[in-house]
Length: 429
Image (cartoon, rainbow, N blue to C red):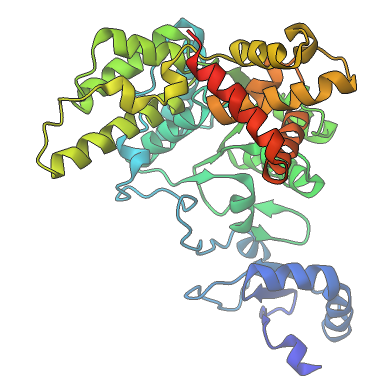
């Protein structure tokens, strides 16, 4: 039985009132809390009656001196594991959070002036040593709208002002906290910025953690910023306990960048990267994309090409930029509607039936093919395709894509049909 206790580091304060238990790593903590906690506490209470047991994580290099004050145990700062992209930001951390993702680089117009102003206000208050004007500060918006950029800009600004900041997702932050017997205690950050919180929405355990974190930040005056894809009040997966706490703070929406913002972004980075794109090419790029991430992807492709031909001693400016950035399908006027029309013509059905809600067997196969081609040829997201096909759920779109992928691998005739329709789409005017 003694071997079972070996991984634990146990200390007792001088008065015998507090037993501190340090776990060697998070995995052992999970096992212990699920399988051994009750037996351990029963044994501990038989030896030290009325003693309070405090649990926390212990990492290499962390001092493990006996603790004489119960409150000190709760506030004991933990050494956070070095995990790329999730560690707290330091003033000397020369990464993109401090160089690229800044407030100045956050392009906006009147649609998003309120979220930006609120972010500025929160940073200034924390930098001045005041309580945050609102906690939690909830930012939501569709993918590619700029939520991550805004959170990273806040993190960088606070770091430059000498504040300790955590930027990452809720699950990684949860691993850095001290697990006490009755509450979680933030280990010392002035600002906690949690991105992509919707990933944890289906977990009741994570929802309970976020709710307790909001309470802890309100009590200690810390800035807590949480980003979601949807307004938390409209997320069906979130329980009322968490929703009530999130909506008690400030909730702002970041709208997806319109054509003006996308064009300004493309023009700015065209100059920064010295790509030499013409006005009509920049306009084409802004019109073809719906978010900033897509623009970055096209410009990265063009930058990589210029770098490669430059190394080969060729004239890097003597090329057709559009042909490098866009595939053949993208250079043509191919759209989801054009794909559906070609599929409908091949199977002698109406485009409206393919897009619509009918579940006839005659419509099922053409719809699967149309969805697959929209994904394969246009690279549209599952959500974008679902919106075009009568607001279908992304899981239905994924089912169609996977079904067709398997069918095309096993059925040569069906593979030929899909290829023939794809060629018609590419060759259409």
